[in-house]
Amino acid sequence: MIRLIYSLGFMLVTILASVNSIAQTKKDNFKIDNLTELTSLLEATEPSDSLAGVYLTKMINLSEKEENYDLMADLAIQFFHHPSPSIQTPELKKQVLKRTITHELDISDSKNRGTLHLKLAGTYFNIEQFDSAIVEYGKAIARSEKKDSILISDSYFFRGQARDYKGDLLGGIQDYQTARDIYQSLADEEYVNYVDGGMAILFSKFAIYNEAEKIRNSLISTYKKSKNTFDVAIQLYNQSEDFGKQGRFEDQLT
Image 1: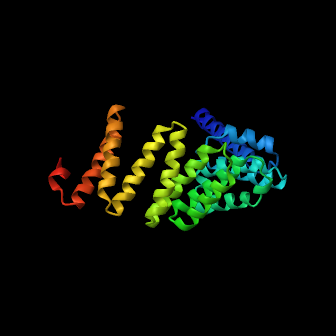
Image 2 (image 1 turned 90 degrees about the horizontal axis):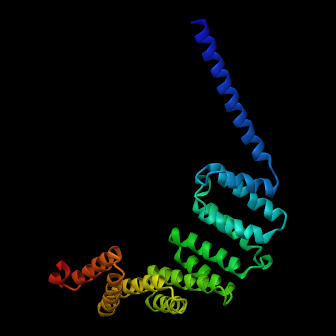
Image 3 (image 1 turned 135 degrees about the vertical axis):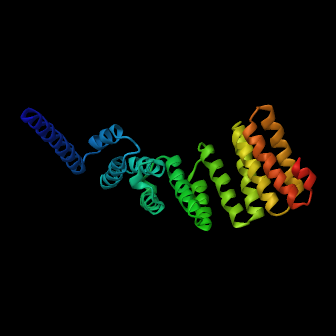
């Protein structure tokens, strides 16, 4: 019995020492003020760990302090997508992006300049502030260069969606069409189809059912050829909803 108590006591002391050691290591990590070391810590930490967000935030602050604005832009864009639970609030994402954008004249890569505005627009879109999102998508387009064609097409596409939510038929269709033309020139058929789907939904909202049906029939044919049954089903479902709005109930059931 004495040996068992001694053994359990020894184990408890060992566990407590290990816990204290881990806690001390974390405290020491919080004091680190070096980008290289923080990068190593971030890479060694699971993205789903709250500490990953802490390290990334420190790196953004430090890169700004050192006037390394290209790195700050890279980190701010990473911050927008990062899954760490400690940095998931839209307001926090918005603050980091806006602070980085104040240095955009010192950011050398046009793609990063445009992407910062694209991500800020996305933050506004996600909280349904569509007017602000539309403005920022416009800035993303303006900051980009011809070589940033994917970024430009995405900005038109997402701005079209924001205008769609605002009920702006003409503005939405115009942006969708511009995005579609660019995606088509890049042979990006997947996004051509996404844009077509958005256009069909927008036409439907304004009861322009004949145009919506033409687009959906084309998409159904395309998706059937590629055996993409999931997207076929989506288009059939959306079309059935439109048939119901038109009183075409037999077509809707079919």
